[in-house]
Length: 114
Image 1 (cartoon, rainbow, N blue to C red):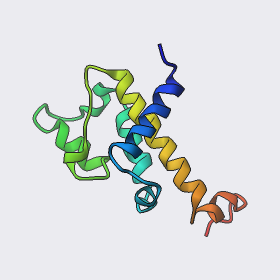
Image 2: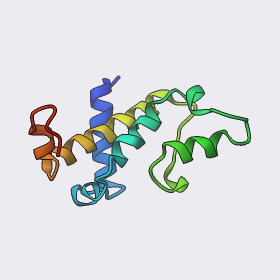
Image 3: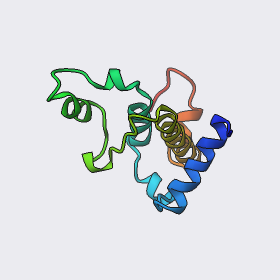
């Protein structure tokens, strides 16, 4: 059985090799979209279901999901898979931040935000 770290690493490789989400593509998501998507997958399913039953999904997507609804691909019967997706998206966001334009924000003294 693979560890969580191994599952996340495998999912990140799949995102890159199968989905073709390259570093350049990830760098276009510079408004925290990768982190928001990760948060959505990390939320327990019962928390994602706010509101009346018929409006739950729409309310959730409108509030948090950063992309078109066609990209929302939950696996409600496989919590490990959802957390694996979340972890891989967090890894992508960390890589994006380390690559680029936010280096000055990461390295700025606290209280001195640009």
